[in-house]
Image 1: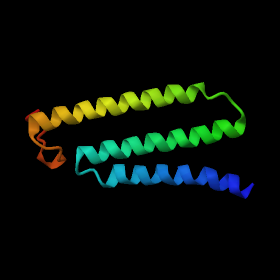
Image 2 (image 1 turned 45 degrees about the vertical axis):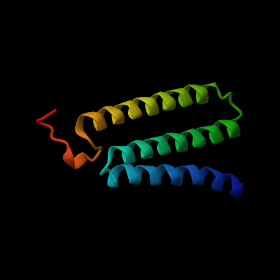
Image 3 (image 1 turned 30 degrees about the horizontal axis):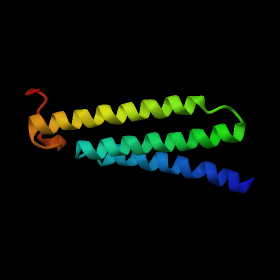
Length: 99
């Protein structure tokens, strides 16, 4: 039973680490997008562990993974657009009044 609790603790720690990077290390857009993807994969890992222990079907996991992939593609398109218009992805170079 202790090993099962340890298996649930690893994804939760990785979610917290991803949130920490997202909140405190947001200098570049690419860094925030990578931390969002890390959070999504950690949540996917946690949900897959939870659903396998409970014995439920994993159709919801496929839907969640599809939405995570769409979010990643949208973030990459936003990154390319920002780099083309502003020249870099550093948040300090953006001006809200200019956009």
